[in-house]
Image (cartoon, rainbow, N blue to C red; front, side, top):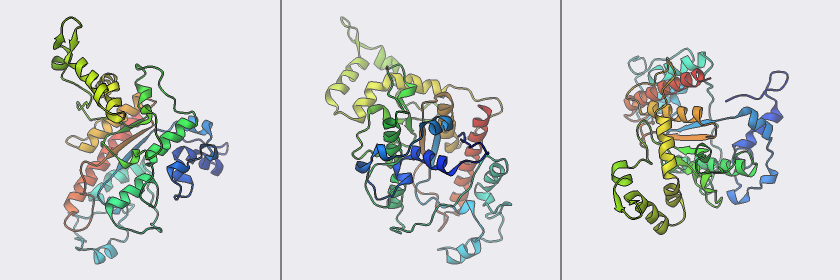
Amino acid sequence: MKNNHTNNGHFGRRHFLKGLGAMGLASVLPLSLRSADLDYDAIEFDSSVYEQNDAQTIIVYLYGGPSELAGNMTNIKEISSKSQNPYPLGNERYIKLTNDNFWGNAGGYAMQRMLDAGDMNVFRTCYRTVDNLKSHGECTSQAQRGRDTEGGAGIIANLASILYHKGVVGEPTSAEDVGKSIPFVTMEGESTFFTEEDLNLKAFLKPVAFGTGSDNPYRRDRWYYETRVLDHDSNTTYGNVFDAMAQRYNPTGKIKESFTRRATLEAFADEIHNIELPEGVAYPEDNVFGSRLKTAMNLLIHNPYTRVVSMGSPGLGGWDDHSNAIDVYTRRMTQLMEAIEAAMAHMKSAG
């Protein structure tokens, strides 16, 4: 993410606030507003800041109680005294701190290396002061909508609508312009981040699903679908028949749109998956976060039209630091942070 600086080398407050306009109305205006209340003319949006910043974002959302403890162990004694189960304080097999009090055994070593290298910023999220609930499901819903109540469009859906209305994200002009047709990508399937509610987004602004490695959700068995001919007079294949059925019987929406774009998305996904990593860049093996981040980074680096990739954790749970989850938490957090460290190296190597 490139910073837009003022002449004195500092990011001016006014430019910062203008830049925040690109992040969606829910980020800068009272959270009580609903999607239906979006007044695009009232949103202060500086297109020059947006274009100079040229931001692309990967969101890694840790479902199931994503504890922030790995980033701050300064009050671990107090936490241990109030926890459901006490922590094994003084046992470095479980708890060893870095210079900046990260939980070394839980990804903290990778975090410390990135912080020292200037590759990471660490900040603490705000305390919840409205609707102070503890339910993971409701908290996730609210966090991904940017609102303190249920309902409303997701943050990325709002962003998509705003960028389109401000004219900085344009509709593709042809079916071959596939890169331009996927500004928003999900690597976790359905997600509240993309919930439209009453936004009625154009098809190209809706999320495109992406898999990792050789996992291409748009690929068919070419021999079966593309070469088996049902009607030799018209040379109609199984694939032609399925495409026609999809348009005839599926209601208007995501399924029909996916069938329409399937062939171009299949080729594009294969192209992204076949990109070789720059020399010296290696993602950790047997690491699901590494596999997803490798694909996400390839996509952003080689497709400037992609704005946001949402990447959730594989499955719910495992991020709580209480109960008997310490072993699971430390292992998964280490995998996540080492994968992010590899992604940073990938980004820098690609310039």
